[in-house]
Length: 599
Image (cartoon, rainbow, N blue to C red; front, side, top):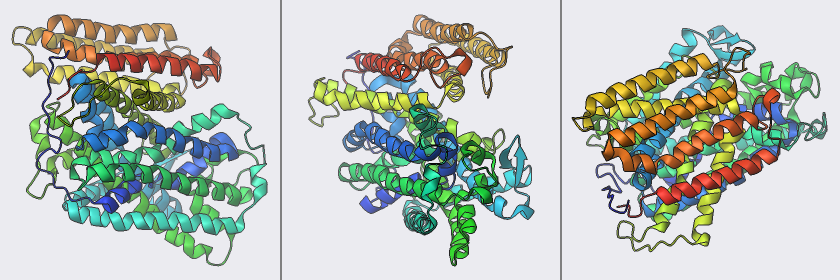
């Protein structure tokens, strides 16, 4: 594979370098402090009780490890849409597409999630607006009023991003400072009504250590940390990426960790069980209590202290600005991913258009339009957050593999880095890969299976969209094959009874049958593509590590401690050890199959 060469422009050419150190730090931190601080403290406490504090600390440590290789990559190769472009450089077009697909789905789903958060807080305090409805105990946006207003907020996100880089970043600076001040004032105020007995009601860790890890992925904690990628996806717009990327990544992990831990402690300590309408110690019932639509707002009102009512009103303002700020940041982020995909020719080049002001207008509009689609099936924060988090973390698998391949190579873009695959250079990449795999696993089987199906769907769609560039003699055959395989995959996915299932019904396929069917689909596509289209063979081989990782996580997530309890075979913590071993094997395959001379 040493003969494979890829040409790239580190800057992309047309985007303006307008982000200094302060701007990129505020951009990264602003992406971290959104709706998570408004909802995740209650969601995590309902899962793992007072030990939710430990979930935040563990998450901060894990994401710091995940960020290590990205920090170095961001300094070596600053470019927009970096999360998708790095794997394209080191592991070919197919890997690049799949990571771009996951990254784009993650990024385009954040703005609607934040729009939902804004309206959930407002709707809970002003029921007369008719913004919310309740389905099976879960608060959702009402149709058509709530969903229509959410679409209007999405359009506002697009407008802000199309104002131009400097003006947009100036607005983001002020909003981020506000987003840091208000949560800080909130947790300080709640410490004044602190009740330490809440930490012992029902025990500090009644659900065991496995619940601490599960809460990271399903309660919104992981969602709170994935925003560190802002400094990477805006890399080509940094004035000095070599200096500023590292500082932005450090700040985007350290500041939110400290803030969220303090918020979690203050929320648990200020919890008024009677006001929440929940029996003392019934932590799980919090998720379906009236407080679920506005935990801190209700906590401040229940405290009954002078001045807390005014603070609750300010908090309500922040409940609009914090999610909205994160929403328009990610609207710009998703556009940068589209821009990267266009420059890698994974999508039509028209989508990569950048106007004279350095704004990717078409990419912004497309991303916001697609984001609106997420409002239809699940217009509720708690329903969206787990999948969104898993999709975002999946893209972080590529950081460790890409850096390891770059270090393995003899030269990289004439930067003078002579890479050697020595253990001291590779181990941070390996640990980052394992950390990302663990966070995905902790999300549980239902969430991971949804992500798996979406990823394979994206792979087959890419194969169909790429038919015009395939050899003329095999073009028709490949198109017919990929369309047929996609149709068969969709039928199997629907008939199996696993996709989007909150509980697995008795009529569902036996899991070994489902696993075999999914494995056959992937294997058939790999073999057929290599045999029929020789030009893609090298790219298929370089993507084997990703297919292997996706398939390997499926049985572990089903039979492990976060799968259906009636089929659990691998107990905690043995399942974690199994996953670590499997992840290291997949990482080794990725390093072995990566390009030896990326250019």
